[in-house]
Structures are given as C-alpha cells and as structure tokens.
Length: 231
Image (tube, rainbow, N blue to C red; front, side, top):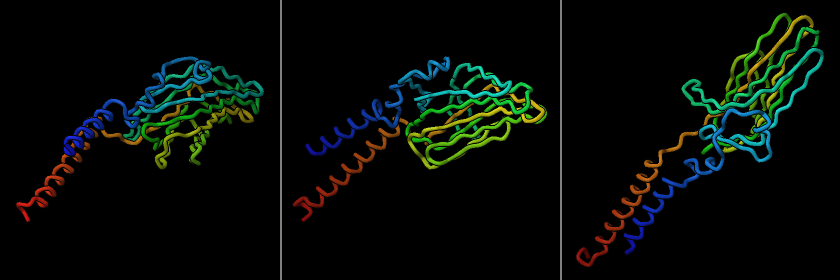
C-alpha cells in the first residue's frame, strides 16, 4: 500500500508540473500577451502583459522639452531578439522627438515600469535609434532596482547581466540635446530581458517518476534485507 501511495503521489506531482506549475508560466499566463497599442493603453491602471516569459506592468511615460524641442509619443509593441545567443523579450516604444536647431534645445523621454520573469530575470537589453548633426547628442541611461545600470552615449544597443532575480523596477531616460550648433532626434526606444532556462514539463515529470522509482527500489531492497529468509 505504501508503495502504491508513493507512486500515486509522484504521478499527481508530475501532473501538477505539466499543467499548473508557476515555474512553467502559470503565473505569467494571468496577463495577456503584449500587443501593439497606444501609450495610454499601457499606462492604464492595473495593466500588465507578457512577452514570452517576461511580464511588464506599471508602465509610465513622460516627456520634457525646452527651446525648439518637441516629443510626440506613439505606441508600444512587443519584440524578441537573439543577442549573443540569448533570447531577449521586450517592448519597443515608438515616438518622434526632435530638438530642432535652437541652441541648447532639449527633447527628453522618460520611461518607468516593473518587470518580472519566469522563473527569473538574468539580463537586460536596451536599444534606441536616432540621429544627430553638429553638436547635437543622443544618450540613454537606465537604472534597475538591483543596482545595475545601462548607458549609451549614441544610438545603438547595450546589455548587462546580473544575478537571477524574479522582478525589477526600471527607470529609463533617453535625451536629445542640440548643443550650441546642432540638432538631435530619436524615434524608437526598446527594453528587453532574458530569463533563466526552465526544464520542459516532460523533463520535470520524468525526473519525478525517476526519483519515485529509485525510492521504490530502495524500499524493496530494504524489505528483502529485513525478510526472515535473509536472517
């Protein structure tokens, strides 16, 4: 009877892992898949969405301008990218910012959000597109709540690895500055994250059944050694 209970428990645990384990994405499944939508949709109270195993929530976007600078916000769209062999899951923010040519003009976009990964986040990837003329500059700064920061002094991309963590808060700032005799503009801002690998559901199930089988074999061996015929 004890052996049957052991095997039944293993089968139940395997079924749970196959269908409901949070390590396999049940928790992130509570949010809908991210889709291309306006900034206002993403900023709505309580809104969250998934890009693969990564969940974005509490999104807020702001802009600051001075001089002849202008910023027009567009929408968010999900994307995935393979960077150095690692799959990144993220969101692009499309917008149009331009300093114009008035000296010292500024066009700045700020973005904050929370992000979580299943099972854990291990890497952040940041990218933005833009152009400059003369003394104009484009730059990007990003600070994560675990103390990691990413910076770019020109349009392009960068990434940073860190110890596995399930969730983070992110503060991001992208700035265009005209300088004394130039201009700068930008049009897209992206952020993505990679996660630790998770065994397939079938792998978890086979591992559990394997452990159950080993336990049963050990039990049978002890029973034989304790049998009167072996005394």
